[in-house]
Length: 152
Image 1 (tube, rainbow, N blue to C red):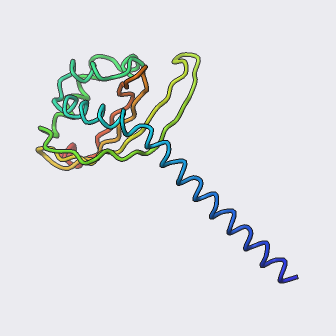
Image 2: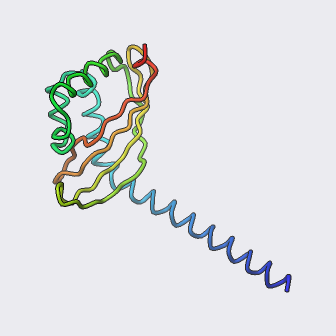
C-alpha cells in the first residue's frame, strides 16, 4: 500500500518536473522569436518616447489605446511622465510574455510584453512596454513607467 502511494507521488513529481521543463523551453522559444524584431524596435522607440513630446509619442502608439484617451488626458499623462527628465540609459529588454487575442472591436492581434530597467535624469524606472505586432513591425500598445521620481 505504501509502495503504491510512494510510486504515485514519484510519478506526480516527475510529471510536474517535465511540465516545468517544457514550459521553460517554450518560453525560451517564444522569446527568441522576438529578439531580432521586438528588441531593436524597443531600442529605437524608448529614446524617442522618452523625449516626452506628444506628437512623437503618438507616432509610436497603436490607434486602439489612443482612441480610448482624450487629447487633454493624453497631454496630462505626457506632462506627468516628463518629470522623469532625460533618458540616460536602458538595460537589455527582458521578454515577459506573448498573447494573441481577438475582439470584435479591435480584430485579432498579438501583444508582446517586455520589461526594461531604465535610468532617467531624475531617477531610475522600470518600464513595462506592450507591443502590438503590425505587419513586419510593431506599435506601442501599452507603456507604463514605474518610478518614485513621478511622486516628487
